[in-house]
Length: 144
Image (cartoon, rainbow, N blue to C red; front, side, top):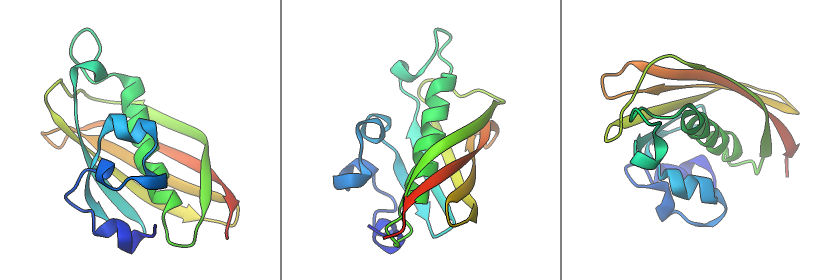
């Protein structure tokens, strides 16, 4: 599936796509695709009770999963059948989002090389405050 095909799912939950793009983690996180083009992707996630720490705040590991999942989908669906896997990720946890809130994950491609893809992302709470930001690199497995 390439970006133009994914674009037809804007405004829908990615679980409606099925197939290779939906792994068990994506299905559990249940992102709603807001926007996608060849360099940027935005998804919305609802913070559910099972995603929170005992204080009702979105857990850091779930923030990492949201970032990794959104960045990975963008990196792996440019239309040229690239398969890439995350080799490293750095994340800063800056703010908070609570159970019941919706958060927005924004993923951007920084640079695509022959064997590595560099990406950055951030998570915003409903007040448009950054609650996490990070960068990742993905190793390209094939180009065909």
